[in-house]
Structure formats: C-alpha cells, structure tokens
Image 1 (tube, one colour):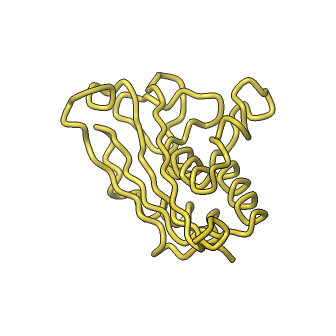
Image 2 (cartoon, rainbow, N blue to C red):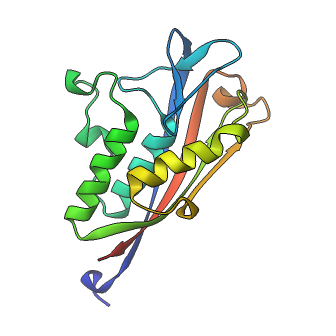
Length: 166
C-alpha cells in the first residue's frame, strides 16, 4: 500500500502550562475555579486540553504543531480562545481532505476535580471538532503528588486523534 491509499491517520499531542495567580483556569473551554485562585499561564488562554487535541490533529497529518500556526510571538494570538484555534485547525484538516473521527484526552492535575465539568468540556470540544459528543473522550487523573502536576506547579494533557480521509 502506498501512503495515498491509507484512509486513516492517528496523531498524538501533549501540552503543559504553569499554574500562576492572576490568570483564568480554562480547560476544554470551561472556566474553572482553582481552590488557590490559580490559572494557566500562556500566550493564549492556555487551555492545555484544547492545545493537546490541536497538536494531535496536526500530528496525524504531519502538519507541524500549534506553534507553527499560532506562534506565541505573534500578538494577534495574545489571549486567544483555544477552542477557536482548534476550530481553525479542524478547517485545515478538512482542506487537506480529512475529517475527525474521534479524539481522546487525559488531563493531569491535582485540583480542581474535573468530573463535574467533563460533560460540558466534551460538548464544547465536539462542537468545534464537528463530531458527536460520543466521539470525544476526556478523562482526568492526578499525578499522586509527583512532578509539576502533582506539586500543583502546572497542568498537562495528553491526547490522541483519529482522522479519516473523506
């Protein structure tokens, strides 16, 4: 089989941002309240969940990473809504003749608990990805007080995406 005969592509993505005072904590487009009033530091809104999924989509087609399309040194993207960036990449994927089949992500953090918010996150992501909510997996786990996530210095996310040729 030649590469042009493949009808499925898979990609993975990863992102991490530092927790700092004075910033909003946004994950999957949902504004959360951290017990210590911390949020994620970054050039955009620093939504690690949306960023990891964006990188997974780009990776599936070997199109680079989020920084290639929305560079942090470009003031145009200062404070940008990461769901908008995700939607733009979905358009790029479509322009290349592919569509999202499903995504799955795991957010690594100690606090706050995400369980009450996962349904809304999945809905936000599904809308921007152009898929049914059943095609979006979002999970959360702690790092058992280990590493930057466990010490509440940051929040990270791992994601995978499956695309099909249209």
